[in-house]
Image (cartoon, rainbow, N blue to C red; front, side, top):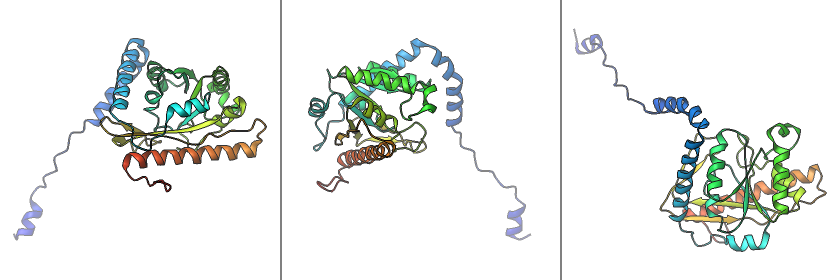
Length: 269
């Protein structure tokens, strides 16, 4: 028997299987998720820990040169509707200058409850509802009621924070909800982007969530205020929605260019 035949007759050794911790961890989370969600004590403890962590991350990421002046923007435009993108807004509550009132919109879903608690512990007022979509299809999610509450907050002189894109829709495309609020309230939409040089991007998430990390640099970039006419028709509302999309994307790109050191004056990223 030659060497090749001998080799073929020998039993093949299977490659050792690597133990994966991902599946057991995921199974454990699915097992404890519902009991945790029912425990107000656990939720409050987690929210307090996360709020402390967010403050720490914000404090250990000093602003880079070129970052915009939030205090001046607040003085110039209050009350306004601050627009953020999903997945790019995690540090937003921590960068709101102290003493400035802000109300933020959070979904009524169970998953958003912890996020709302964290924001509350960071000093924000909370309105629960779905504001990304406008129209009858959103009424069951408390969308109309939420917009009314936000409008009343603006009338009282309080700034409003709102995620512009629709959950699990097309990321970084504004929904009509924020434009409707601007039309009803007569207050401007102010695009806001917050970025850090050290971050972990969750590539598999629908919105490419950026987890901000400590000990880097940060930037806050504001777009020009966008005013929606009170008599805007359907076509103009769509044009304003696209304008919000462009302005917020531009602010986001500039914020990342600033922290990554790729920003060119007058030319952006």
